[in-house]
Length: 432
Ligand code: DHB
Ligand code: FE
Image (cartoon, rainbow, N blue to C red):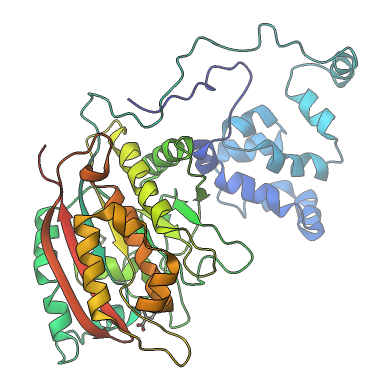
């Protein structure tokens, strides 16, 4: 059963949700451009020509040209963005609102002076059942089938991109992923929820979302300064992503939603490690990807417990999606490493392996480990490991009521890759 949208039947009202936002992305971007005087001048000089610079549908362009705000809204426009058109025309919010009601400006003004539009008869269907956002239903829906964990060291991607994986330095590391590539080729999911961290690529210091879910149809490969990696673009799953957003936010996690986001090594290196080399000119990644970016760059970063609980919420969301999708969740980053200062190069094999044992056997206890332990024991960048707890929390044994424990299909640990200890794990769900 899809999540309920009790707002759909309210008369004369469109709620700007993830679907509308996706539909209206460029329409709203065009509107936002009108905040600059030079763009307003160009639009006024030749509206059609200025609109033609934007990838809008013809219907969206016509709606703007005719100032049909209701149609603009139906086609994904949001009133705060659309107000830039009215402002450019020198119109007030009241004039814009009146234009959408079928009333004259004068009649609308008079109605407002008389106390406004009465709510009677305007509530829509009020007996809509209240939805429990995440409850799985009996319908054969999406299933969470496995979780995969891996480090994302950029040098591993470079080794693949430059054909160096057979060199002595890299051979033992890539040998540790041979099983995984074979397994993934035989158990290719439809969608991977890929939990990773952005490394000052999509997000700078102006805006630091703690948890940012990618709801776009496509994510391009970032240029981190060395030029973009020669790998295919990442194809999203907007419908499932919007559903996860809806469900997880209702479950109490105030996600940031991202409609445009370049993805860096944190996301592309795990894909390469598990899928092997892919020529972007005529190959695609074998599944859709929903990126979930977690802030581990600027403190405060989310706690292990919060990450674990988010994973549990994502499982509930996925399992309530009404389409027979095979979904995996990947946790990436780690293991012990420190990239900065005189303590750079710190590796703690004993701690890493004890942490992996606990992640597998007692994820709740693992989730209780405080940040300071990661920093002290696994290095400042070892904090990336909290992201693995999101994937672990999405396994059946962490659900309510708990299902069976996952099977450890593969476990690998290697030192070093560049500055980092590399960890890799595959947990597969077992039948209840
Ligand atoms: C390295 C590891 C990382 O996780 C990263 O994001 C950047 C560099 C490294 O070991 O070189
Ligand atoms: Fe990293």
